[in-house]
Amino acid sequence: MKHEALMEISFFMKHFTNHRKCLYQFSATWKCQLIILLVTLVTSGCAVQPKVVTEEESQRRVTQDLLLLQKDQDVIRGSISLEEATARALKNNLDLQIELTRKTLAQKQLNLTSYDMLPKLVVDLSYNSRSNFSGASSRSLLTGRRTLEPSTSSQKDVFSSALGLSWNILDFGVSYYRAQQAADHVLIHEEQKRKVVNRIVQDVRAAYWRAVSHERLIFRMHKLKERVRESIEQNDQIKLKRLSNPKNKLAYKRDLLGLEREISQLQRNLSMAKSQLAALMNIKPGTTFSLVIPERGVFTSRLDLEMEEMEQIALESRPELRELFYKKRANAKETRAAILQMLPGIELRGDYNYSSNSFLFNGDWLSIGSQLSWNLISLISMPAKMNELDAKEKLLDLERLSMSMAVLAQLHVSLAQFGNVSEEYRAAYDYMQVQNRIIEIARVEAYLGKISEHQLIHEEMNTLLAEVRSDYIYSELENAYAGIYVSLGLDPIPADLDNKDLLSLTSELEEHWSRR
Image 1: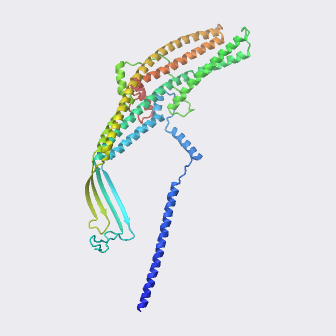
Image 2: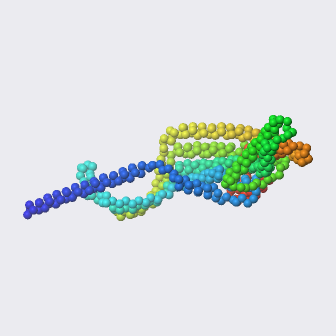
Image 3: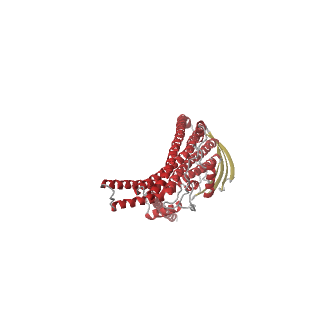
């Protein structure tokens, strides 16, 4: 009987041992397969290849971009005035939209930075599950004997949560100066926007007046070019008996060809202005539109300011100098933030905790605490940091002085240019008036047969050139006059023109420019 019992126990132990070996082999195989699967996923994820854009994606992108370019465009309902052209450029110009978007981004970054000054409110949720209990026993360090039976103080599945409020006084100070720096960056982007607005308004004025010359003279240039071409063809077909030799005939044709070439050059130079104006207004290339054609006259705009007063205005108002001032102010706040980062940080913390572990005597509890930390390496790196900030401040001072000199030089140059162009326009305007009287007499003489067709064409060409030169110099005069305001740093538009419709924008520009 005893022998049979021993045999059963031996069989059971052998079977149990084999079963453990099978379980171990199965567990090892399963672990090996899991490792192979993880390695495969990692390596396949790392093997990313560059993907070239497809033709369909390019076509889809182009279609979307063309639709966006013409989105929310105001319909052209009549001839475009200078004020409307400027309003369209301010409303639709993509360069200005980029600057406005950058300013908006800086404002949002400021709003985001302001949240860094608030205490941190953290919610922590966790769930832990085990296949068995996390039991433990104790062993005496003196005798080496086990002193307690294995026991546990935790369930297999435990859910815990914590709601904590912490506030680092040092981080609050640093975040305060970072927020002030972000506010300065908003103002820096505002000055950059002012600079772009000044450039756009000046470019629109220059392109507008050249395009006006093209609108005013294009019909006459076409008619004159047709007359020159007819004269060339007649010269080739009809033999002029009163010409003594072929040299005179060739010289006559040469003059006509020279006139045709000069007219073509005028057409090409003036026709580009309208395309440039359309681009500034973000009007689709090829769109037909007309311009308001002002009457020619004497330029009457002037500036009733003393030179010292203009220099003071320029040094106070130029966006480049104001931008450097904000950069220096932001650099000073970076110095204060660097000093704060050198100090020890004090963190205050309070938490509410909960645990589903039924072995705990108290499943929820409140805790408070404080912590003092000090990065001693910041003390070592502080001199290098301060040297960097001092060098940056000196650089900003030098840039401001250099920019101030450049601003004063630009102001004097713009005034001198305006004076020179004013004299040039007065001479061109007087010349045009005299030429208009000459062409009237020449037309009568050609009708009476006192002068030849060739002489009349020459006078027509001289009249056309006089008008083109007068208009071109007038556009330069308008550009030089606007350049004075740019050099002074005065805003060419009211400050409250954002998000307004085209009609309101145009009327306010007219009122603002008439007052100025």
